[in-house]
Length: 179
Image 1 (cartoon, rainbow, N blue to C red):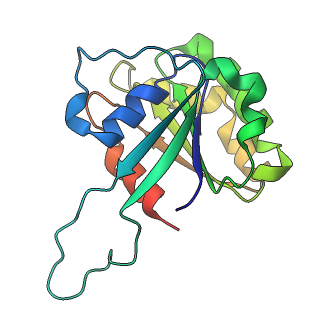
Image 2: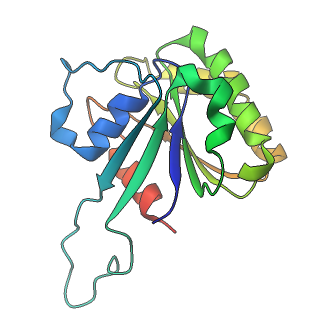
């Protein structure tokens, strides 16, 4: 079982996203979650794809993963959880332009952490159901992703997601399942 953590600023949508990955039917437009104070552990079971014919390309892939969510209010303590991390999910609320700059500062501090230099990173642009289409580009511009990706060692995958509409969940499952 690989070690995976989920980080992001307060109210970025981490809990909602992880709950949707855990049980997609548990989240709808009326769902509400409280900000995580401390940590939360989520076991995500990957959707079973029906094998075509005799050969199943997914037979050697993991069936589930455990993800540790660390609340945004604990950002000063995140570094204490970086030991043995293989994958990191970083969630940014794209519907809140004011938060994106602060999210960028936290993200940069993660990228410079020596223990995370070989970690695979998934940058989740969350709450896309509340954002207008141009917000994705504005968020990436504010995070300076094109410049940043040329300067960092880590492999960063970017996914647009919504826990409510389920957009992006399949891409997240696939990313989590990869070695």
